Structures are given as C-alpha cells and as structure tokens.
Image (cartoon, rainbow, N blue to C red; front, side, top):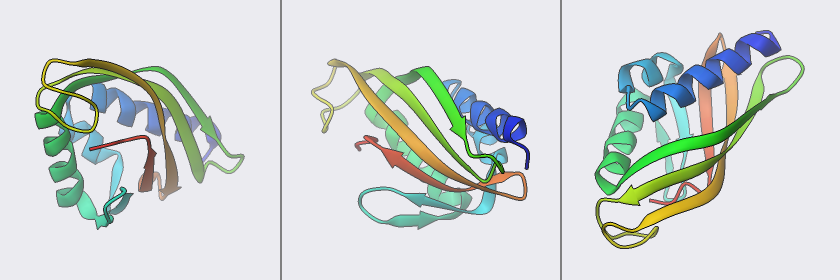
Length: 125
C-alpha cells in the first residue's frame, strides 16, 4: 500500500471514530484485527465493536489536532491527537460531568489495504 493510501485509511478510521460511525470504522479494519489494549490483546470486529461501545458509555469524546505519520512502504502508521471529552460515568479520566483534554495516539499495522493491528497509547478505560 502506498503512503498516501495508508494516510487516507487511517484518516477515514479516525474520522469514523469522531462521527461514532462504527460501520465505517469497522470497514477500515481487517476482520482479524488485533486490538492491543492494556488489559489484554483482543481480536476481531466483535471485540472492537464491544470496545467502542464501552468507551461510548463512559465518555462523549472527540479526537482533535490529528497528525498521521506513515512509513515509506505504508505498512506501519502512527497517529497523534488530543482526546477531548466529557465523562458520562466516573472512571480513570474523572467523575461524571468532568471535562478532559489529554494527549494520546495509536500505532497501526496495515495489511492488504486494511488495519490489521491497533495499539493505543493513553487510551484509558
């Protein structure tokens, strides 16, 4: 995959997260996607859909200040962004109603034009 195509893929994925469009987000992911979150490695679309649902219950969030970086052959990418949101329930990011703004990012592996692995950084539950 070319660098510009990988940038487009990651941008589509992050835009879908901001729009809470799970179907578009899943369309960017390989069916065997690996999600490396702090508690355990998770696999597949169902696990990712569950993860997004749980996050949506916890907070109303948007990703801003997004910068996407891709290696020369387009197989690895990283995105840096600011997570801004309001807590819907008490958790690691604060109490119900608290607003937050934190730096975060994700690392990606890309295979056959789809995201095959996501490793979030500062993506607290």
